[in-house]
Length: 268
Ligand code: KIV
Image (tube, rainbow, N blue to C red; front, side, top):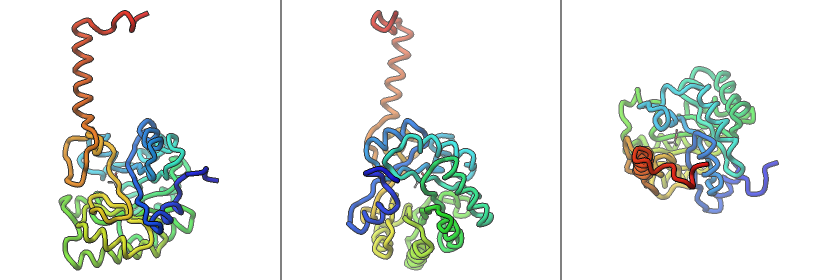
């Protein structure tokens, strides 16, 4: 039984019904997961953005199932309240439905997440239906889908044309009908975020989708100012930790080299 205050997929649906916004962030390790969970984040996504944020890669394409299981296990062990969602990495769910089921099952059984996320619309309806019927909650991901970067060739805003917007809303409704409990909507115009949220009863969690979606998600290392290789316009930095860490480490190096660390109180 989930404890009191535990966020579940049912909580999220209820939040949307009540018009209460959902706050989501990413985590890849136990320390950050614990900090975010204690601070009251509703949904913690073990994103395949682990590739760009933690592994120094330029895309998410190379992330493996074993890596996602490893990071999911670290994160889920740090969470008591938040709903923990694990990303299905590229080619873990596209090859076949049975393989998708086996891989999603690994994220739940070995990674101890409570739900999985996959990128794509109508083409993945049979997969979503199969996972949901096996008891695996599924979060969709529409708009900019970073696993398809090699097909699209850029990370530019999606859904800028009327026809593309219509198709994306139909994708969202198809995912909802297939049993998805929420959808991440990435880097689309605000008006599409608003329209998609109005056209579905499951929460639309925006990242660069404007202020009208049912919730927001950011990559934690972006909003803390730790990841500075690039900064999408939709990121708001609440701290400048890369600068603070740099200053702290410079201070430490200076103290060690100058002989002022450790002092008497720091010695035995
Ligand atoms: O992998 C990830 O961190 C994501 C978020 C950007 C939503 O999919």
